[in-house]
Length: 440
Image (cartoon, rainbow, N blue to C red; front, side, top):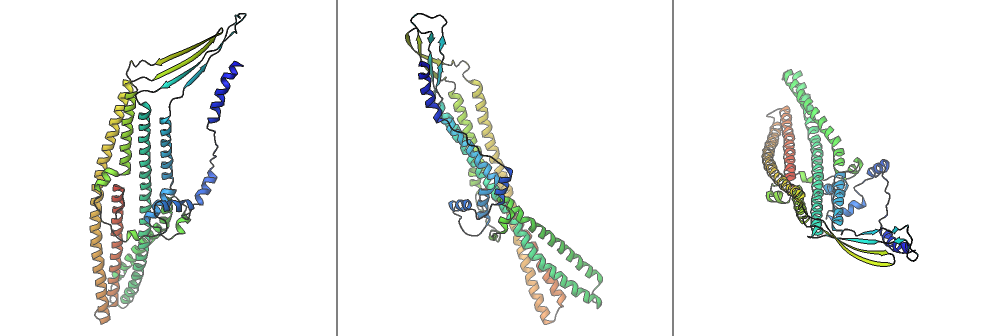
């Protein structure tokens, strides 16, 4: 009865506070069905867009990038990994549990008066010293901050993929439009050349050259159609939704109609880029770890009050348990110092790499913008020549075939301009990735 009266309150206190297991089955069929049912009209996505001040409007690069941050599995994985690391904060903040010990003994020799049972319950209460709990919490907070920055880095990577896929799709659609016009002009030129050859005005070689140019245009058109056919699927994969979700909305390519200024975001890239901030938080966590190992030079104290009942006597005890710090925790301290140095060098190496990445991306963007400017001038000159030739045809000074040739040249110049603009937009995307910030 005395034993049960001691244990029953303890069990009653501990058991109701236990966290219960909740099953959450995972099945490939259900997850596949969930993916197939994703839509850009999803209620959760609408709430997410509203929270990020992007509710309504067309599906531009920025808006689809937010959809990718909501749907894409890479970002979702980074988000739950950050939650997992953040859960360590609660662990770091916990105080060590006391230990209750109960060791009853039974004596085979029975005295006529006293009970043969000897009761000896005791309690060990650990007391952490030197602020170990606060330093442990500081380390966990820094690790959680690093994980949050890595979510931002993954979200930017998702945006980069969305932008690249949209640019590819936009370029393919524009090339299809331009190349179809050029193919029509080539067909018209071949008809005129055939008539002139039959009349003996031109040689068969000119007709052969025209047919070769037509064949090149047809092949280029087929390539553009192939890229357009796969472009939507590539964009859907970048967002993290099925293909029909992209095909059911109107895409806004207006961001690619102009070339943004490069700006002066070098300082921002070298001080606030997400992956760089994650490494800076890693360094803070390593430094907090070193503080914790230094604090562990000082031993914790275990206060051990106890009680003993023996042969009718109640005896109370109070003990202390202190670990003797003979090695002064030198090994773990040295390891923590090495980890801090490694974290520092990793940060500095990434910062230097970003510097080089910025220089290369900026030089490439400036050169490609200059090329696009030259291509625009050439396209304007070709259009002007075509207009002049049209007036000359109307005046009867040149043949209609010459006008078709000038129109083909103007069309080819527009195709070249489109290619130069796509190259410049690709370079702009590389510069944005180097800065992890959009060019405006």
